[in-house]
Amino acid sequence: MLFTADHDDIRRSLQKFIAAEINPHVDEWEKADIFPAHELFKKMGSLGFLGLNKPVEFGGSGLDYSYALMMAEELGAITCGGVPMAIGVQTDMATPALARFGSDEVRREFLSPSISGDFVACIGVSEPGAGSDVASIKTNARSDGDDYVINGGKMWITNGTQADWICLLANTGDGPVHRNKSLICVPMKSKGVNVARKLDKMGMRSSDTAQIFFDDVRVPKRNRIGEEGKGFTYQMIQFQEERLWGAAACLKSHEYIIDQTIQYTRNRKAFGQSILDNQVVHFKLAEMQTEVELLRALIYRAAEALVAGEDVTRLATMAKLKAGRLGRELTDACLQYWGGMGFTNETPVSRAYRDSRLTSIGGGADEVMLMVLCKMMGTLPGSKGNA
Image (cartoon, rainbow, N blue to C red; front, side, top):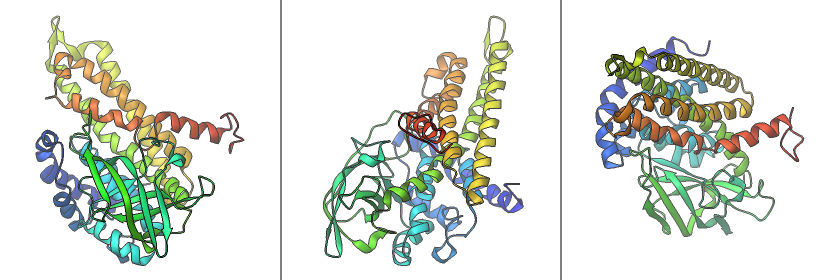
């Protein structure tokens, strides 16, 4: 069994926190196009939510990955996508490689305050010309004595305008593209770091997303995570947790939209009966609920394998692909049943429709997930695969 009574205790605490400290403010944060990350993360850090599976010696709880997955699923109960995504960046996207491969010195400087909520973190991989194609990034960290001098830019950086540090993927050598990159912890207050603009997004309105430039930014080499040249490998490992997190965070949000649609269509009348009484509607909602449960089973299977120390690239990729596809189908179907009200910004289904669209793009587009799977199946042209 993946979850125990200990999981349930933390789950209940998190549910109470979301109900008291997050959901009452979501509408306000959505209108403001930002939420107070430092304030919220400090509250979460004080309760231990930001380091469930992080090392005890750096302030974490030292639990296994199943606890982090449980938290990701519960964050889906937040009534928007932007806030849980920002929390996920802090816990499962910017910090896993640091926790696993960072030196004690760099973990004390960046991981500990991220777990306590004193620091807000962001992850710097994507660039204007290299989104899902991670190997093609151009940001460069030139060696200069005991320092790196960084030049380049990053795009679509969640938490970017509020972050204290960025887990930056940069080229640190001239070798093969999969072996010339390193992950580096860069303080956002460093000279030469320029948050150029806050992006105006279709959805995820409450999270801040930035374009960032680096102009001769000097950081000590001791800020590097693990070995030089291993950054691409570390990031691929980090992607396993990111993609599982992204899939798990969809589950409760999908169920919430199904429930809201049931309530609305039960009360909305057309042609002498409720919309819900139409077979096409209640059958479709039953089908969507079934799809959510199938996705949950796949995610739980992947989490169990990850806890057991297995490589879950295949399962995490499948889960992420399915979550994105399901989010698009489910929210589109439900929005249709809301009729004209579904096309207004005041309904939960329209927010979910906008927010869920990112799942098929962020963390690797659907097409990249399919390429990964085809490579593993040996069906990608030019690939021998692992099958």
